Image (cartoon, rainbow, N blue to C red; front, side, top):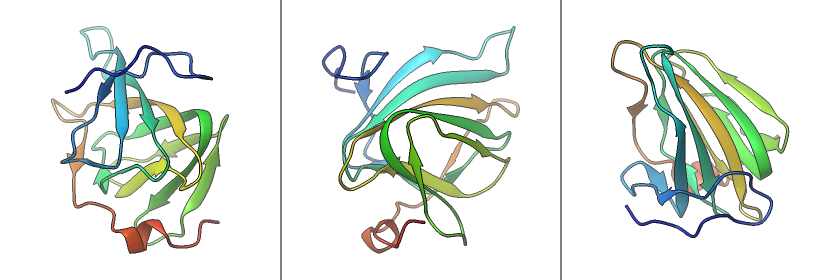
Length: 139
């Protein structure tokens, strides 16, 4: 993974390292903030998406909380309309709900994710979000 420059304008955490192309479309950076330990059953990371970048479809066996800290993004659960998300929004992803999230086409987006573990598993990565799926009307 490629190390990014330290901080970008309007972010509170360093950008982190470039995320793997196998699970993300576009340019995405991940900065781990807190690992799972014997005292907690979750991890925390800051994720920065360049405009148009997004996760693959995925789910979390024990759920995830998304805290948008910068920019404008998109969030979609399988079978539901795309939602626009903005700085200050909080998204609660229930366990095993297939979804994706990322930046809008015109703005970068950074969010902090708190991802719970079920045993040793915290995410099941699925197929990439197609351009057609990404470009569907956001509500």
